[in-house]
Each structure stands twice: as C-alpha cells, then as structure tokens.
Image (cartoon, rainbow, N blue to C red; front, side, top):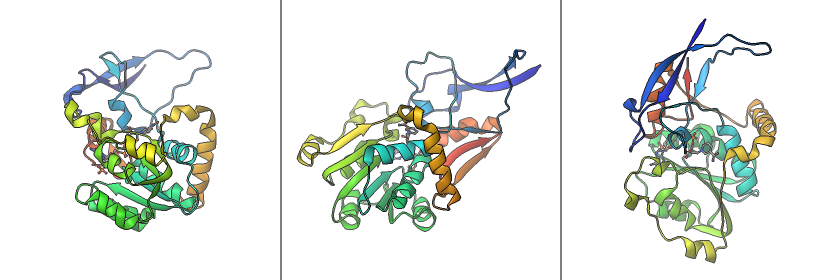
Length: 273
Ligand SMILES: NC(=O)c1ccc[n+]([C@@H]2O[C@H](COP(=O)([O-])OP(=O)(O)OC[C@H]3O[C@@H](n4cnc5c(N)ncnc54)[C@H](OP(=O)(O)O)[C@@H]3O)[C@@H](O)[C@H]2O)c1
C-alpha cells in the first residue's frame, strides 16, 4: 500500500494566497493495473498560474508542471520574433520565465533590458545572466530609465507582469513593435477593481502600429520537444544559464508558492521532496 500526499485548495483565494487556503491530504493509491507504473516525484514545480486556475470548484488539487523554459522560447521567438540588433525589454526579468527570455534574446543578437524587484536581482541579471541593462522597477523612474537605456526605442516587450509598468514600457515602443503578453502577475492578487485600471494605451497601439498578443504555452504543445531540445542545447553550449530557488520538503510548497507573489524567488522556484 502506498500513501501519497497532496495539497488541496480548500478556500478561495482573496488577495494574496495564504496558508489557510490549503490543506495537506494523505491519499492511499490504488493497486497498479497492467501496463501502469508508479512514479515518485523528487522535485515539484511551483508556478504563479496555480493562483489563477479558472473554473475550478473548491476543493481542488494543487498541481503544476515545469513550463518556464518553453514559455520563454516560444513566446519570444514566435510572438516577439526579434531580429539581431533590436531592443528587447523583459519584465519579471529575474524569474523563471524572464531570466530565460533575456538570455534567448541575447543569443539572438538583441540588446536586452530587464526590470526586477530588487537591486540584488538586477545585479544577478547584469553580472551572471548577461542582460545589458537591469533596473529595480520599485525604485527607478521607469520612463526616464528607458529613455536613457533605449534611446532608439523598444522593438519587443516580453510582458510577465502587466499593470502600469507594462503601460509605461508599451508607450515607448517603436513602430511595428511586438508585445508578447505572457502573464499579469501584478494583478493576480488585486481585489480592488480600481487598481486594475491602466493607462489608455490605444493611441500608442494605433500610432505605432503595435502588435500585442497574449499566449499560453499550451498553444505550442505539438512543438514541446523542439523547445526542450533547443533549450537543452543552449544549456549544454553554456549559452543558457539557469538558477533554481529550492525549497526543502513537501510542507514548504505553500511557502514557496506564496513567495512567488512577493518576489522571494530568483530564477525557477522548485520544491525538493
Ligand atoms: N502564458 C503562459 O503560458 C505562461 C506560462 C508560465 C508562466 N506564465 C506567466 O509568466 C509570469 C512569470 O512566471 P514565472 O513562473 O517565471 O514566475 P517567476 O517570475 O519566477 O516568479 C514570479 C515573480 O513575479 C514578480 N512579481 C510579483 N508580484 C509582482 C508585481 N506586483 N509586479 C511586478 N512583478 C511582480 C516577482 O519578482 P520581482 O521581485 O521582480 O517583483 C516574482 O519573483 C507570470 O505572470 C506567469 O503567470 C505564463
């Protein structure tokens, strides 16, 4: 008899996720049938999208999968389609997706500017990840910073966070700029509808003839192997570095998850079981 553990969401999220939204449940696994096998997880992935699963009725199992690298690869190459020499801006730049986006953009010959939430994260982006410029969006004047670091404008924006930060970036894009809208974490926990309102962007979108496209990595499900192979090759070639923020023990899963929303992590958040 095998007893497994799982996290179950037992109370709807209101604002930030809290420990009392979850409970750990033990579950006796049924006997295997022919052609079935039992796998033991050594690590599990913790991801922001688990906060916004739509259409789930409480209680539901908290479950996720590692998708960051393919999200970065397909969102940048298929939606932003950057050319060598272009300027790419990335928000959420020191996270799992963002840290990969910036490196892939560098591999493709672009100038890369990132925004992250602490000075330490920005130093990591500059000194280890290879961003050309990185700034703390909590302390810098974003519009002024972009005028200095991207004097010729922005060609591509990989948007992980949404909100006002993204509006400022989009308002400084070049003609025919491309925006890949990957996520909107700045609003996931926001309960006040007034604070979800943003700058009126249509004049910029029309005037600069921008292409703004949301995407889910599932769109590229039939190209999953291509993404894994390409990313792995870049890792083997030493062109793509990664950092894991590792939490220890199944019971730390909720702490790891909550940490995604206050910037506790640098790189990919995983839990070692
Ligand atoms: N479209 C898809 O298929 C797909 C797939 C995977 C992920 N996503 C999305 O991609 C984004 C990044 O996901 P990830 O897994 O790589 O997570 P992550 O970036 O590793 O972790 C989340 C990060 O978001 C930042 N953050 C939190 N609150 C913020 C706020 N109010 N404003 C700005 N930044 C904030 C924090 O960093 P700071 O310290 O910099 O604030 C935090 O470290 C998320 O929006 C996620 O939902 C989309």
